View 1: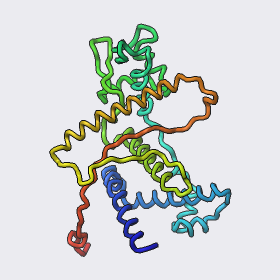
View 2: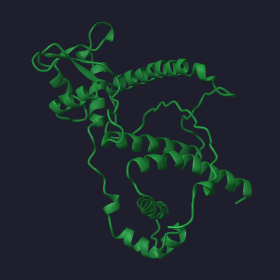
View 3: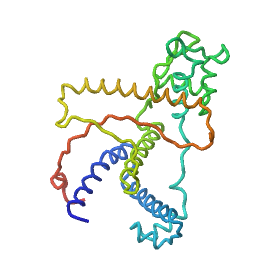
View 4: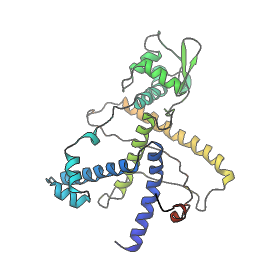
Length: 285
């Protein structure tokens, strides 16, 4: 490992981990808990790499390859507490409801505008039927309450409801829904970057950025933000329409499916503010 390679690697990891550490800190995850999580991840990756090569691997070998103490490896491989998967939130189901409302002709009026729907009645064209017919099952009453709370829908008179957004936006920071979304978004982005950085992969996945070479004047930030939101929404809507049309096609092998999609995000790189840690630390207990 050359000096320049290591310097760039350390700087890159600091840049990536700094915002992650801030989220962990705000969520109440202590450093020792994070370290324990990393131990488990290193052990898991080592075992998965061995499985891909159809090899069995000992706890001692796992310890050597991962750098995790053997006693910790033995403890982690005999406990599944850290591998438990939480119950999924309703975020995907709520997003599916909004998607259907904007793409299913049964719930669209002239020019493709989503209809205001009665909560019940008018069989096949009410909010309850909209939710019940979505591909991801969710209780209609719960969907109504959550979408109303998130301001994705609004009451229209005493009996009807109208949709305000095509996309589901989590109402609270650090809620289970937001953490689930954060995990999904970070995993998908990291997976794409990892795929593109793998030398054996000749065909790369889409990952593009556009930015002004010398930075954007601050006075243009608000205008740029609005422009990006508008154009990104157009793109997402077009992709959403394509997926809705694709769902109606006759498919030869409908059971063979891949979890894939498109994420669009705007970034603002924070300034790299150097800090002399020694000046902010005093000795003693």
